[in-house]
Length: 307
Image: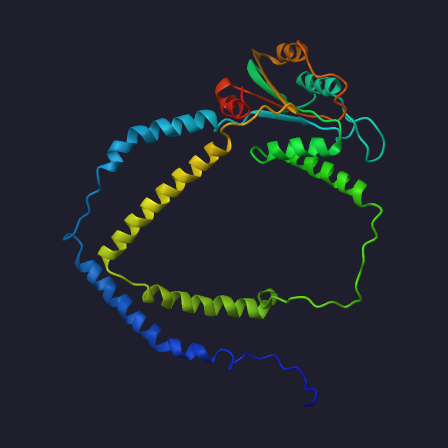
């Protein structure tokens, strides 16, 4: 064997199997034309009659949509305070700390920050959640449990940073090993421009013919549709049941504290937030979340955190 110059060309041998599709494609074209004629002939001769479920479900649908819009359609104002934010945490370098009382002070201060255009206005409620910890792994664990149900970008970033800092402390003395270069790796041909376009075109040809191969009678289609609807309804019911079961019988988590205050304007909410008993400075690594909105808009999250 000798080396040969590269000549880019269409792979005729590799794609010769596409020639077997021609007869089926021609037949499909003829069937489409005759189907259009038959459908035109049925105009005025056939009609459909919807079932009784639609009328019976209209009331429940209207009430359900209204409840969804009331509880989940309103976007409350959200504020997240973490020790890793600039000017918030104390300490130097990677080691940042924020005690629980200082966290509450920062949350309260932002309620009166007139320079923040996103500050809520008017009489509203405030739902505050504190994540308490004394170590990075404890804070990361608390945030991971909360983010699994209600992921908020700032809290997700805080969780990841805490996890990375824990990993850094445990692995900073390990020296990773590196094998000799170069290394074998997979090369998906779909990444190549010509191969990707060719695959899309050939897959489209096969898909068109597969749609004819899967053809069935109208009665069979209706029976399959009814079966799929039943399976879909059962799947949705099971999904909701699994979610309810996941949140059933939970134990109180001392590393997460929640409180609902209001109604009131931002000044009144600030005074109420700082009033009463609060965690002390023994919790040196904390993060906080505050949601401000209407009573109805906060009701779902309020029940989610057990208030």
